[in-house]
Image (cartoon, rainbow, N blue to C red; front, top):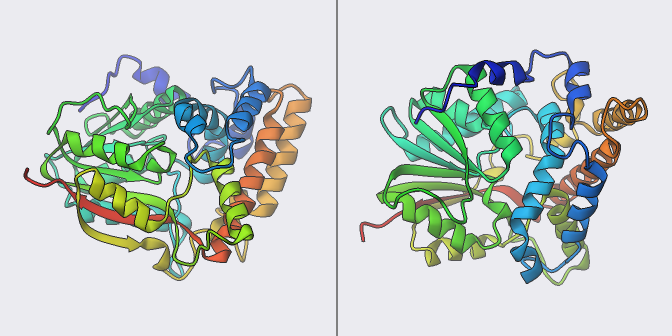
Length: 360
């Protein structure tokens, strides 16, 4: 599934990668994004749309595409600056770097799906394509990513061109709630911390089931509350509301609700495991590391504070768009809520559900 290479040179020049000086990457935050001239307004509109506290509220569901697009227009550059190209969590083992843990996580998904050359794979909600590139290199499978955010589609295809993976990877604009793909056309599919933005897990899963070939596998890494979550506990609910608002989620389902949605969509459940319980170092640790290193600094609390101050200075000098520091503060609050909910043990971003489309 090759991508159009007519703009390949421009795409290669557009990439800000891990070898670009940090100062350059910092000054470029939000300058390329669709929100650059309306950062404050976009953040205000996003906050207004997310003001409905009730999970999966009808008003939120009706506006899910706008909510998610506003969110990623604002945060994509910050995510790339602090997190790299893979926007997901992974637990680590002692002696393992975050980059190594992320790659291991993505290799694990490829192995569970049995990916190999010749298979055609769907990445539902592919972000800027970090997992896709790792999985394609590892497995040799051809991967099509769908993403409903124009800016992330451009970023993903730029990264693919820069990596020389055009023969295996491509990204197009698309909504996993209404996939523009023929039925029974995809060998396997995966979604890594992506369907958390869906207004209905059942409808999202049903769309993916439709495009899978019979007996095709779907690996979904879902964000869920754990068995320790108490819906009657005000503190637990407050933490979930903060994570929902700070991460553009429609709500946070229980593990049981996610499994019920998969079954209702017509999938057979092959396995379900909370990957956040594996490893030695918890998933939220990069946001609050025990020790600092050059690799972990930008994700740390101190690193985030320094970034906010630097962005504020750039905004004052009119190098960064007005409102950029407000976005940085917003993301700092989101990170703190993730740390708190992770330490409370009531939330996992890495509940893996292995599903299979039946023959009939």
